[in-house]
Image (tube, rainbow, N blue to C red; front, side, top):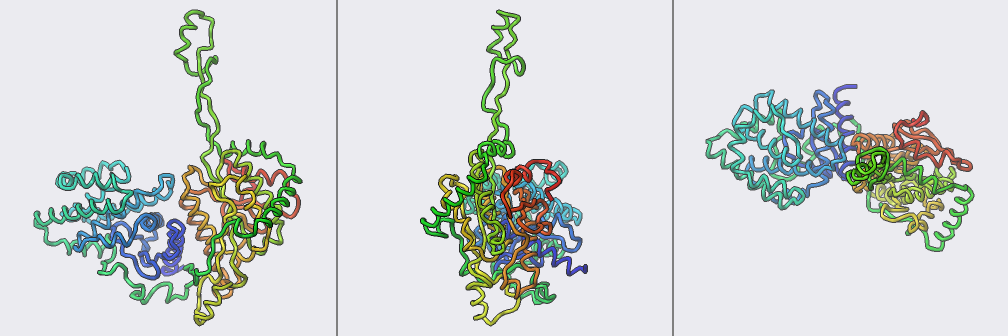
Length: 569
């Protein structure tokens, strides 16, 4: 694979990761830059440059994850409206906003945080190796970044770095100390934070004027030339993508590397309640209850097994008056009165408690009609009820399309002159059969909509997985699990006919890779027909063509318990 192809592949994966983490479909990553709706978003933070030349994937991942946090936590319009006019002011203000966004990353996203730390450390090494920390301006910039980053992200200072920045910190902190405290206190409020960031930028500009620094612009230009600062910005918030006439995506014919959506006007997100009328759902519920009764599943016993899988031993008190354990000081007097008395100990009373959530994402494409979708509805309903008893939160989601072979979107495309490589060409339909905050009993009528395949059409698996992931990571539960139930491959006729045959396949792979890389969600698959090896690293097959066996109802134990058996692929 040549250099350009490798760069395109890296940028392709980076785009998928940014979209999955930030939930921003308009975002793309190319030419070491972030684009929104085809226009480049100016980000001045110095360490947010990937390394396409040496293909340091750890650096690339950290940069992409940091940019995702910027999209997720920063109001760009608010940021632009407060940006200073001076070159150094813009630089410092942007750096401080980027650090604020990174400090808001969920502490449970350990993979993402490690990636950002590695990218930052890599930049620090290059900055120092180039001698830039030895110049007056370079050292001040280096010092400011480390001071603020250490405070906001609660990262202990590196002893070697501490020695390097000690003199600059001694000069800097007396001027910005109160604003540093304000940054820490207001990092969740962008407007309040911006006031302190502006004050710090003004203080540093004043320090530089007093010290007689006159070559700041030359130093900044030198850093840009060394790729230690992003490319020089222009006055506008965005740099139009058309300025890159030699765009890798445009000139090489690899348009399908970037997932696009031609039309979103007819996309829908609905609920099981809105799919069918109440009378229909009542009848469907009766049918589903009859199918479940025929299975003779002991739901209480299943709930106990699932409590072991998803529960964590938690101390809820003490067992007192036992013969071993911790000495109970309140019983020493009994031992003194009777040396033969041995029940002077106490033991921790541990109870399994769950702080987990399981999301079931179900393929509602037409091919699933050929499977026993009734059996699938039975399995999901039983598992959801058992998890509810076990104290585990659940969400049941489905995905389909609004029409066959393009729906309304393809009509818009035809009216636009049939442009080439249009991207996704059907109307997306996402369904919430049961949300996380509704228990099984209250959601049972809406869940019965799973038993009617009238809305089963085609599948946009990658987008559905992104949607489910974004819903899941917004939840407060410590353990996040997702079960992706599919017949093997995404399929949407119009999109497949007018893009490359692997267009939807590639997008699904990119989304899966991005999710698995974050380490925040345990993603597993259940195959109803064909192998999922092309998409998921961990999945298991279930035969839905006949009566479900006991093994099917124990699927969560197989795929989520540590040390999965050999049948987990």
